[in-house]
Length: 288
Image 1 (cartoon, rainbow, N blue to C red):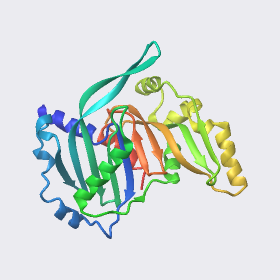
Image 2: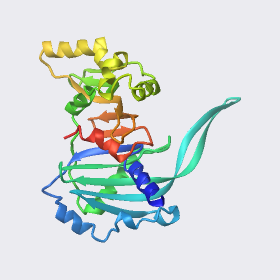
Image 3: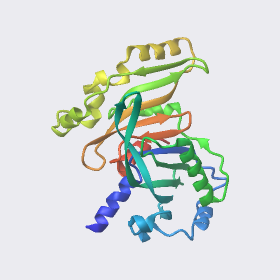
Image 4: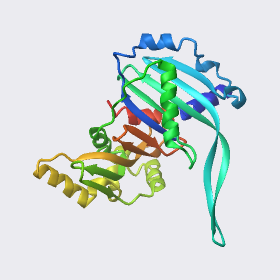
């Protein structure tokens, strides 16, 4: 039972609420054999204790099927907003402070020649610049190389996701050139009701978009008018930021979660702590 729980926890830990970056793997600099040599002294994750006192500041590796993942575990304080309090001419913000496992990780995917890396985006007071700096310092400490990070995420990947039947895209921004930007939004659906309908088999996951057209960008009149204008005037319209709800039953039960794709820094942000690795991979398989 203990091992089963630990395995489930690791599946959450490798997905969950995170800030991911996707880069092309610079194969002329990093080969699988080279990396295995660099990390030979890092203990396997099977040796992990799952004891906060023991695991703090520890680094572990996992090697399987042309995938190599290295993660650093820290115990940090997370800040969650509770309430605003007004007292005369003062506004006080109240936060709840909790100790959490904070994961910094990098996965080298030699099957698709890409790097997936990131960190936990926990707490309202997260310093993104500091977290980014720590992440890339961690990758350097693992590889010993100053890698050239070529962005992997493109506007085409947003389009691939946006047209999926199990995806409801409710916010998107795009640009026609360096000066023309536009943002479009749709109302958010009651996603628990959609999940309930799916469980009652009123329709299937691959019919979600057809059964909930009012909550998807494909029925946004202005957005579609912009696409038609771009086609008619022969200029390229690039989607550069998209937020959506993704439904999946890859773990044999129906779940959904919110994500944000941003091609400006090749990042993916997840907003739910309960996403498992399998559910996240169901999204990543859409990305070459």
